[in-house]
Image (cartoon, rainbow over all chains, first blue to last red; front, side, top):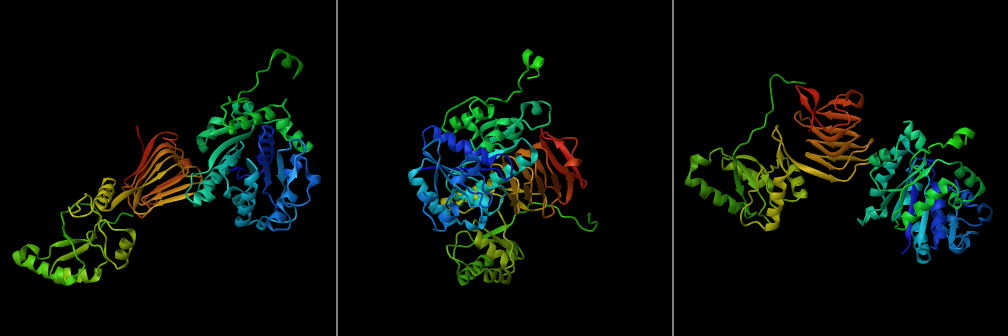
Length: 269
Length: 240
């Protein structure tokens, strides 16, 4: 049985797609068979971040409507052969999905993949509900900022009440907190919520802390998920996330502001 | 708000409870007449609560009430550990359903029924206005956008109440975590209702219609506290 992981947040622009791409690629690099699904119908972004936008022929909605088979729509990643991407449709809206057909597609994918990573759209409407409905685990992506934390709290409420697991009374969805765009320096200056603040409010286990990084924007524009940038702190933090998802215990890094050494002070590093 | 001409206060009384063992009104009538004949003065206008717990099938509640009154008892209401539907039916017919404060089920009732009654009684609290409140227990955090209402009950939250969440109870509210959302106790009008929490960071607290917004909560912000009404004024006091 594949593990179905939804990457969700409530609020937009917090890094869901960036995280989905990093997690999908990271798991595939570890040798697992992974499929990444873009649930953001109408605002297709995942293929851009993954750098496969020129290879989209059929999309998720075509598969749902029976206009294409899964094999026709799935795009094999050029970097890692065990990773596939199911892109969203650019021309349709979120009503194009329905629970029953999404369930069928996920079941079919579940037969041949180890992980199904669902990139959720923002908001709490039908599209986001569809993305989280079948999930076994949720990566709740949150910025250290009050409105993002509030929206994540709302989504956690939805995970506990509106998912398939909740409706059938099964074991609840396993929740993970992924804190993105974290700046230890601004936390020290009291401008940003700290990891402890967010953990206290949401009270779910911490999966990772991704530092604010120039590398993320660069990676997005290049269509190379940031996890491939092993030099960057963001890339390394996502690698730690993968280890934790696979059950390893890894210390959290990048939580302290860097102390400026004598050289960087002198040369303005 | 204070009504000078009347005041509600709660007291405990000993009431006679009539345990029904059959739904047949004719049999009940005959046995009652026999009983009354033994001590006619003793039973005259005595308030009676009818316990229907031992009945396995439904009974004509209206006929029972008529029968009780015909024999010059004062009918109070029905009692016994019965399911929700039956309670609702009794209320619908316009009769009050009285909860027992102690487990006083008869020896003949099944153990499961007894356990149920004991459980119900142990969590029961007699509120000062004569209401009998049981506890509604919510395990886990109440998240933003969620609302939990303990109708005719106290609400116990084992976890935190997030900002943007709302907890409402007709009785008291206990939060064994942080209270960051809204808490409304004594929602149906109950001035002795209280709100207890381990950490007060609420958006709003209200008791019997008197409320504070977070900006009015200064003294005990971020501490374990309980909130109550003191002469119709909201008051917060340190919990520990």
